[in-house]
Length: 300
Image (cartoon, rainbow, N blue to C red; front, side, top):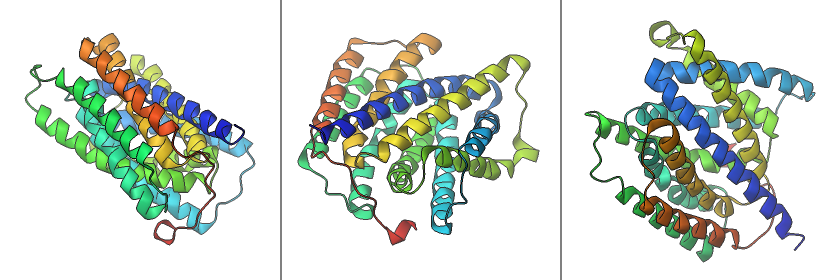
């Protein structure tokens, strides 16, 4: 029981992180439709850097080792591609449908966790992921036949590209969380991605209007809080235990789409949600334990 308690806490933190990130997705979709995905991301990162810099300074940080800085840089580059592809895509497809397309990521990440983190993937984790994916398939079936924008195919392709990079991000997140604290991760991630996004700013950047700035700050606060929760969770539980929790993002996406973009919530969504929750429960009953930090040269 004592060993299972940290796993439960990690699962709850991961669930909360996914929920907040899904709400942020809805805010960012609105901003992307208004000023474009690049500008929405750029200004969210500016706000995020403004929030994280004093928090990082207050934590009395030490300069990370070069290997840790390399991990920060690698994950930031991966997340930069992942983010711009995803938010460009969700501006062109329904939010719930976009999230459904990203659920190839946990299946890819299960294999990556076995290869790079040397984690043993138990049958319950595999079955839980497949059960969750089946739930996503049921919900996605409800989206078939719905009208789409002319460029929705490009939007779906962008979301799929984002999903591949997200799978890599999930595995790096586990490796990174064992070597750096959540505040350090959020600080370097905001600044490094912002540095990458600043390169094309003279040609692509648009300014938000006055009424959009509160949404920019809200998106940044949600993203940072989500990152802190997920970093904390991945430092305390194996990737294979937490990956099925990613499927709960679809539930939140369907709800946000219904509330803010008038995307209907159907009985198929409810049925699929039951399978998703069952998949998360099955993965949570996988072999418990707190994985010890590992040294992986490929990511050092």
